[in-house]
Length: 237
Image 1: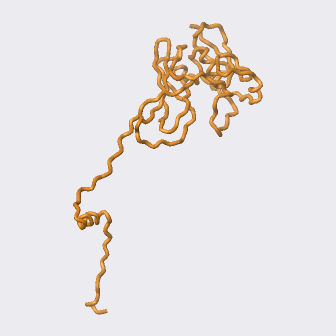
Image 2: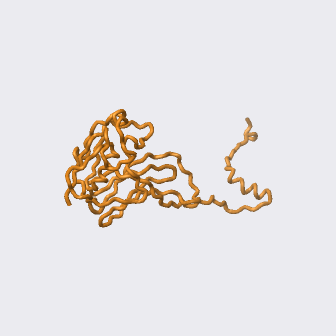
């Protein structure tokens, strides 16, 4: 091929965004600086109280263990706190949710109830437990259980040291145990031990055994027929 007939073809890839100003000028318009999209307003969260129930104690009576009622959607993981007074402990469990009017997408995933530990400045030592939205303890066989979850073959005696005898017996009932008070300590005396002791695993009664016995709608501290028995030992004041 003759040198004079050679041609060099150069193709340039130009982004469409770069051609937009020229197109605007060709239409007789004006070109201004690009305006970035506005950032969404920050989401403000507010506290919302949650229902809770007593599970027991931990750290030899220096902590309380409570159970929240479950959360989901835009609710954050619950937290528990306590205000200690001379003869009482006020417990609160709360989650946070977006403030009304907030623009936020919420998941539909729900979390099942779970336990929270509240560290105390002093031991429980028989102090009265109070708090908004506290739920009465439900007997173990009638308490809700996560759908599809396999119930364990054994029950575990909860730690109730430091609680008043009535609170301790209600916590034991919710864990699946019948209980009785051993000794003649004054009312309000703190629990010093249980027999069997905390952490002991015992076989779970069959549903047939439990259903053949009468049981209260809530745990009132009375004996619960058909369940393993635990003796509550209180300390004299």
